Length: 345
Ligand SMILES: Nc1nc2c(ncn2[C@@H]2O[C@H](COP(=O)(O)OP(=O)(O)OP(=O)(O)O)[C@@H](O)[C@H]2O)c(=O)[nH]1
Image (tube, rainbow, N blue to C red; front, side, top):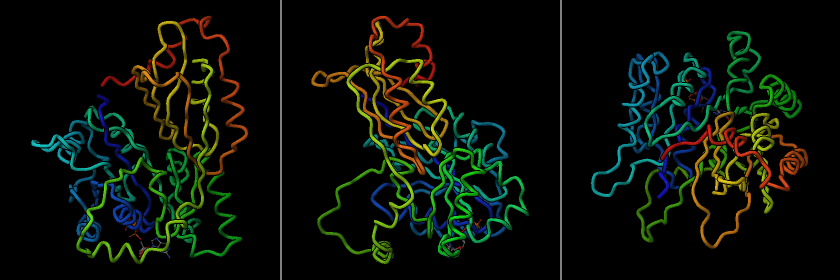
């Protein structure tokens, strides 16, 4: 049975960019259970108070600074606590963990800590940098390191676009895309991003009769879902012929601009490596799992790619170029480019 791993997302951004607003949006949308780590440099733990009413599990760092933890086992202990399976059902209490990092924290360092976690139940889910559109120029002046944060993020949310007019929004979007250098940038209002972009939402059947909670009432006030689909696109690719390992991995490592997540199955068909390779990428982070093809499924490659500002034609072309007409002739050693990303279950 495949191990179900819990993605751990790091949400970073300078003071007031909209991190808590994004978090609250994720907590209200759908039935995915979100575990939250609030990393306040806190005298007053305001953020913890403002989200506490809705979270499933809460580990507030209080005065602690997560990025200052030098020992990864400390973070692992924290993630252990949040994701520990129920003793009776064996089920984890959350489907996704979000670490809200204070503006002062070094987001790339924090993301590296999560990526290095040895906890087998979790996987790195990406570094999301939230920026305030109305304050962008001023924030950048005060914190020149913002440029670096944009480049190191896996996804950038240009939030508060309602606070600027259309030409200014276009200028900022172009500027942030330029600074982020290939990292996808999605414009948002009130942090309303489609959770699909961030993780695979878990759909649980709603109980037929349910008492309306305060959360439902708040959720009912949020505008229709279609708003949140703006700003990103998803591209599907299916191919029954095999993929060449070197060319395919080159496509992944030289990621097309704006591509955020890639998931799906890959068929290489190289002698000795005929199995099904399951792929998950978040930003530059890549994880590969291997198992047998189900008996009723012909080996083929199926990928879903999600991002913002994608050049769909170029992506298809690059993938077509990675098709291998004669996998029997491929040197099995080339599969090392894939298997080095294998995650042992
Ligand atoms: N107009 C507008 N206001 C927003 C938007 N997103 C957030 N806000 C407001 O901006 C303020 C700051 O938002 P927060 O979500 O608390 O920001 P934060 O990044 O968590 O702030 P810190 O934790 O202090 O770093 C709040 O008053 C929000 O209601 C938006 O898209 N548009």
